[in-house]
Image 1 (cartoon, chains in turn red, blue):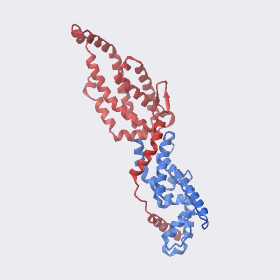
Image 2 (cartoon, chains in turn brown, red):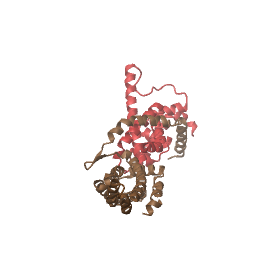
Image 3 (cartoon, helix red, strand yellow):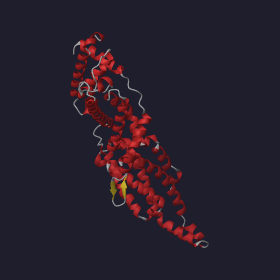
Image 4 (cartoon, chains in turn blue, red):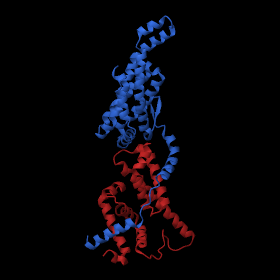
Length: 226
Length: 165
């Protein structure tokens, strides 16, 4: 390239950039248009994959939102189940009340029978929380396959719990069903490749400090002391 | 929220790219930007992660913008025929009083492959590697197209050579 050509190229570049400065991006106006255009497609995208005979997996675009919601509910559920364990730990208490309230005594007996399942559910929720907390770090270090495999194992446990007496509790059942969706979606990361999807999950988790809040919940004295 | 986060991260650069390919037409740039994001969100499930998300998104934006400009050109050509006007073309060559006007017209007249590389490199500051990934061409091809674009523009601006000599 001659000196003259170099001078022209520099001049041309400067002139072209000054020629027509790009206007400010109308961010909100454009987003409103995109959001409006997307609404009909979002409802279609809601049914994608069937999990056994139970439910349909929500699409990738809302997976991270389900994961975030599930993580929040995990923290709440751990606290609630810990409280439930506290009220169910009393054969002696049931015996003391048996003389005055036969139905309460029966309820306590049922509760005691469910205790092992509830304990198993609590342990399962703690493991699931650990998985969700590990997802961003493992993605950064390229260990998505490991996390996906782990999610597959937890998915099996989730379904077993749903079929067990623990699944009779309405709140726990709802949580387990939501976790079933989330774990199923994480489990397929292994197959499809996950760079963009895990990136979105990470962005969402970072924005809401979800890990920080969950760690605070699992480190609470009620759970640690049990 | 995930879609909004993706949008916020990339809209500025995508919009500017669409704006340049649309020859400074704001309405077209907004239409192209909207279409690019709507398509990207609809195809996100198929994104395999074998390129950066931004590269993939910009590829969609370029494709949408170029297709849009071809439609605009065809429409203008039909309008020109109906009006029984002068030679077919997007713009008529009218009196061009100054350098900037001549440059605008010259950029518009560049063959599409050269124009896209020129606006991406010289106007928007993409590297040849980025251009290569977005347009799915070797970076060497990007350099060659830029060189040809600049040569054509230099011819068009020949009478203004004193400005840079």
